[in-house]
Image (tube, rainbow over all chains, first blue to last red; front, top):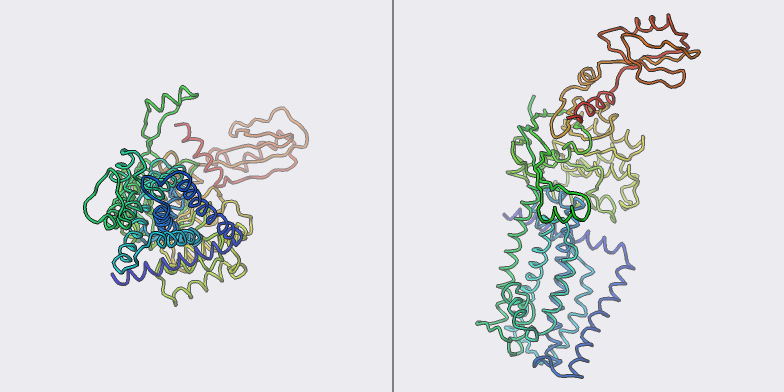
Length: 272
Length: 329
């Protein structure tokens, strides 16, 4: 068991090192990300400010609270793209045979899929995320108590697992359809809308959908509701809203892993 | 001989949907798909002994790649059994792939942007090769495959031949006992092909590695393989030593005659003219019916012969016979 863990850690760290080296081969590409990503998200939050200033708070959420929510969503997005970006490319791996190569190695396939690419560039996504989140914390007067910090870490962890679960499940479709490229774009914009803005501004059907069926409301909205003492909208849930996130995140991730295994079985029996 | 690979009654079914032409056809197959089951691999059995080099050949779509994928545990068969080194790749993929090296000529497992050595280091960790054994194997590979010339060049800048040498080395690092090569010489120049063939012979001789090779290059087969398995339409058509297969499938020889001047009466009762190009005529004849000497003496009596040569059929002729006869089915 110990030696097996050592084996996986040693391979994962080698994968990570190689991934960083590969990205450093293209410094100008790296630089263009460094330019684009902050522009994208800082202008996003600026837009939100204009809307709230000109019109009115969004369903009771004022600008400081919106900044907190936006920042929280962005940080978990940033961590996700660092560690799980390979889940966006399952269809490519199925088509170009990269997936066959994973099956030819004496290691767990899911592990190889996830760890084989650490997206070092994704750290750039974290920069505006952290800045906006800290700014939001300051605006709302977030209390940095030990209990709150633990909760925050659990929320981020759960949020990242939730995102990963969503993309793994969508990627698994490629085992049947061979193609699912547009699914990634679709899921990304869905995530942005459901995590960066209060879920309670949407109609009841969408709130219920993002709470029970595709529970991405737990990535940032419900935790923010608890941290800020807001109203969770029409869907009422018992227990600490923030602590639901790691539980649901873990459950969804395990479910996605199970779906992935079914997909892999289908791949093995259907071929390509 | 100890069997390294045992395959029994292997079947792989594919479901394909029949498509009709045009928009109407597309819609029809969308709403009422006509699914038919096709056997990509249709009841294959063979056994390969330790240290053999086997050429696994057949036309495109004959089921070669599918078979290789099943032997290496990538795909699961519909029915039938596979044992590689005594273990079923479907039951215990990880144990089996540890003993296998696999090279796909059309794809690489090397990191495109990095030097060769980086990919090797990753493989060393994946296969948990201890450092001493790794250094030793690598030294041999560097020597035989002449890797030193390009060990520190990013893979994207390698020539196809160099890249293939790199891929072979990558597949051999963990000292596998079976090596699967799927078209290892595709697109290579004569020099690179020569290097690759030498390497395959070398590891087979010194390490007793069993090699299964699919290829369309029959020179590969002729120079490397002591045994040939020919598949077509998912079935094994021939399985045996190359000479036997040639003899069985192409029991004829060719006599090429060049005339001094055009002649009218060219026919001979025991030989057929298969080709004529100006003054050059190709006669095909069976050894059993007439000897080369007899045919030459018969023909020289009625034809003004300038020059002649006798050709033995080669593996290419034999394979062409296989494809010809079975594609009629």
